[in-house]
Structure formats: structure tokens, C-alpha cells
Image (tube, rainbow, N blue to C red; front, top):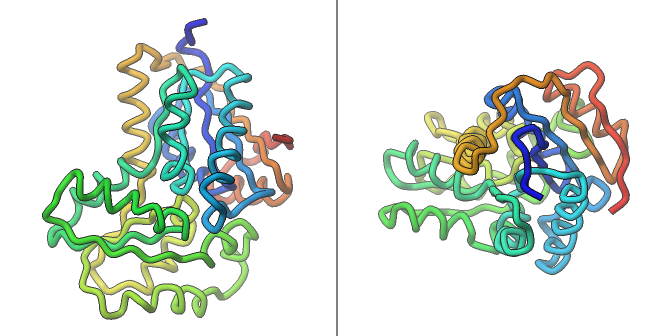
Amino acid sequence: MKATKQAPIGVIDSGVGGLTVVKEMLNQLPAERIIYIGDDARCPYGPRSVEEVKQFTLEMAYALSEMGIKMLVVACNTATAVALDDLRNQFAFPVVGVIEPGARAAVRVSTTGRIVVLGTVGTVKSGAYEHAITAISNATQTYQLACPDFVPLVESGQYKSLDIRPIMEKSLNPLVHIDFDTAILGCTHYPLLHDHIQAQLPEGVAIVSSANETVQDVRNTLDHFGLLNEQNTGIAPLFYTTGSLEGFSSIAMDWLELQNPDVRHIIL
């Protein structure tokens, strides 16, 4: 059955990080219904095997498919890196990831062509950003740095209450001797640490998040397939988490500025 314009957009992430993409969607596509699944119980995905990440990602996608989505946004860099092609082969609806949009934005912003990618272990090992950047411009130099401590800081909510400067300094210290002018936040959790990251980087370095560019891809894709909803439904986003309702709700309220987000538990 062909999807309608009023059908929801599905968004998946390993946890709460994809809310950074949802925030842009609410700003740029206010008429669209959003159903989100965050796999907080099995987060982080970065250290997991490729097979595990593919399995978990497909489980979330199948759950959303059963809910009648018209499009899927993979708002997780690790999942995008290893599972995007599988998702596109498996489902009839269009699927958008976050790596190509992030790479495009960084190449556009950088004036020296020297770009740092901050990501999870899985994303860095995949080399997905390096490949995406090189495909756009082979005149760039890419340096990748895994920051495995960042996602737990966000998922636990500690970024709001603890002095995390020592962790940030230790994680980003390998960049001290690198010459670069642009840093990609290669994990959708990282924008919640934006100010902490900025404080540790050299003055003048531009920080790029894939969220804005990804939502432009979402809009263009919906428009291409005649699925863009321009009638404001006024329906609030629906969130599912495999983990703690309280923890997810707290971050959703903080980041999206929603008073009473509709957060439900899901078993995949």
C-alpha cells in the first residue's frame, strides 16, 4: 500500500542522540508527524560488532514499518555506517542516513580542507566519513578520533550535572598537534556536548553537526516522492525507548523543550 503524505516519519537511534535530528525536524518540518525509537537499553552501539548493530537497527526499522511510516531517518552515525545499504534493500520506503549530509556540510564549511571527525569507535573503524568526504572532494585531509566516553555522558544525563571538563580534555587531547579548521560531530549524541567540545578545540575551528543538512535531505526526499506534508497536523512527536522512561523524558524535555513528551516503552 502506498504511503500517504499524512503518514509519520520514523527516526531511529541507539539512544537519545537522534533527538538532535528531531529538534531540526520540528523546526524545519513542523507539519510532519514523527515516531522515534531510541535503543537506550543496548546503547552505546559504537563498541558493538557490525552484526549486532545491523540486527538492532533492523529490529527498530521493522517496528516502525509496522507502524506505517512513510520514510526512515537513521539518526545514528554508527548504524548509518554499517546498516544503511541493508535498510534500503529491505524496505520500500526511502531511508536517509546522517553521514553523507554531515560530510557535505563539513566540506562546504572548511577553507583549508583539513577536517577532523569525532565519532564512536564503530563509526571511526568503518571509515564511512573518510570515504564520504573523499567522494565529495579528494583535496581534503581527514583525521578521525574515537571518543567512546561521550555517549555515556549524554545517555546518563551526567553532561547536565557533572563537571565533565577533565573527560573532555582527555578525550580531545590527541588533537593538540593536529592542524585543522573544521570538526564534524560524527555522532548525534555529541551536539548535546557542543559547548564542552568547543571549549577544548583551537579558537576558530568550525563545528559541524549533520542534523541541519540531514533534515534538508529529508525534505528533498519527501518532495521527490510526493510525500511532503504541508498541512499542519499539530500532532506531537511520539517517542519509544527500550530503556528508562524517566531518563529519556528528562533529556527530551531538556533538549527539545517539550513540557510533557509522550514517551513509551518498547520491547524489540
